[in-house]
Amino acid sequence: MISVNDFKNGLTIEVDNDLWRIVEFQHVKPGKGSAFVRSTLKNLRTGAVQEKTFRSTEKVEKAQIDTKSMQYLYADGDSYNFMDNETYEQLALSAAQLEDALKYLKENMVVQIMMHGNETLGVELPKTVDLEVTDTEPGIRGNTSSGGSKPATMETGLVVQVPFFINKGDMLTINTTDGSYISRA
Image (tube, rainbow, N blue to C red; front, side, top):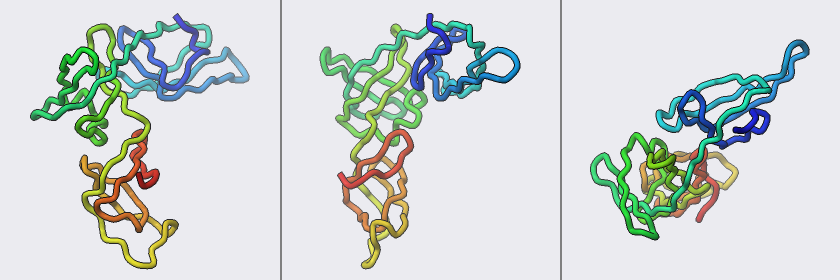
């Protein structure tokens, strides 16, 4: 059990027999009455986001989430296959379990699979990924790095706003938290 005063972004807790990841939290000390913690929680099973308020004296159960390093192999219809690099066991996840991670997954990429007991919850991506530009408008002479942006389609189907000097075939480093362009790879 942990106190709600020890909340951190990304911490996983058990509330009402469900697993929740803390997206955001705020300690509130009103002038009148007792302090409380206002939090935004994301359900790891359903993906639903919910606002929840805890009294500052409350304690919640910290969820035991294990991560296992696995390599993404291939997609087979609606299932996506991963392999444990140590035991060579394979695991198939559905598109619903992967959600937004599909935009960043490339074959042979190593990711962290989140598990609670024997239940697979989803994928934890690295902070950045390198993707190739498959389609974008051609760069025009005179365009600079500070002159605006244009849409570029990456090899996974993700559309990112990039500077004008980026061309088809360039390898780019993309932030997986918000899908933004960082730099050329």
